[in-house]
Amino acid sequence: MSTAPNFDEIINRHGTHSVKWDMMEKLYGVPASEGIAMWVADMEFRPPHCVQKAVEDMAAHGLYGYYGDDRAYLESIRWWMAHRHGWEVPAEAIFTTHGLVNGTALCVDAFTAPGDGVVLMSPVYHAFARVIRAAGREVVECPLKTEAGRYVFDTADWEARITPRTKMFVLCSPHNPGGRVWSVAELQAIAAFCEKHDLILVSDEIHHDLVYPGHKHTVMPLAAPGIVDRLVVMSATTKTFNIAGSHSGNVIILNPELRTRFAARMNALGISANSFGLFMATAAYSAEGAAWVDALMAYLDGNRRLFDEGVNAIPGLASMKLEATYLAWVDFAGTGMAPAEFIARVEKGAKIATNHGASFGLGGDNFLRFNLAAPRAQVAEAVARLQAAFADLQ
Image 1: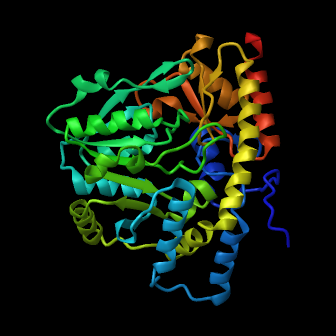
Image 2: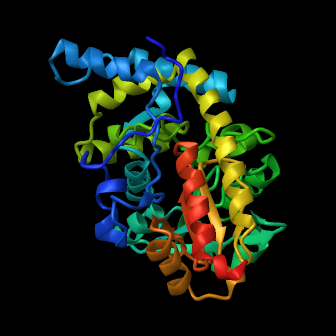
């Protein structure tokens, strides 16, 4: 049996309880029979064979009890971080959560109080603001700026937004939805900002393996070692290997005092790991998993080139060049259309479901986010539909 990935394979997900496909018509009015789902950030690809085999081995055994003896699991994380990111992680610093939205919520719960402010660099992944507000905290939006078609920031612009009640900074690194890989200098500037204002820094690095040629992700503790006493790093196998349904993520905390506070909240909420997620993650963080990721990124690089060339040829549309992630961020401001109009053209005309930019916060109104992690034929079809939907501009 060949274990080589076939990213061109079309896999029918209709009727499989896929949020991305089976909720598309209800939420967007785009029928699954005709539409293209490009919203939820999971991929249309099977994970590496080693992950599938881990699940099949569990099924063959036929018993699904509580997971114990996590040494192999922790060692797989430590191996991956050392070999792929150059970071030596102590096993005792690793907590396992039910994904990183859960990890973010736990950090907000453990390290802030109701009424406190939490900084986000907007526009940014919409779930951050959702869990912050749901916890009774204030979202402090520090807007990004666009220069030469990419996001940049200036911490001096953020100073007036910080108050004595601001206690935490949640960083998305690499950035979703802009696809930026922050430079070491940029990461150091964020670290210095957090030190100046006495903020806990939560660095969500879930996309850290999905980086394109010519760019290099640096984990925050290597970029700014002096920040580790106030730093939380979050990582996961879920985005990298398309196993988001396993709801497994890691919160890595080097400061023992912060670890104690975080562990107390996990214990108070009765959180323990999902055994399926642990078996899958252990299998994924391996030499076979690494080879699969390398093949994945070569394929996604072709998808982003195809998408950007086709979309940027439409007058008034501009797709930010991705440095990381498989989530294209397309600016429709140049069309002169209000969001309701260009959204209608995409959803009703092209029959494509995307994430609406306004949900990502300040600066997102004129954008839509498109998921490119699909067989190339599907991406090409989406481009053709967009060109047809905006044909009057060409």
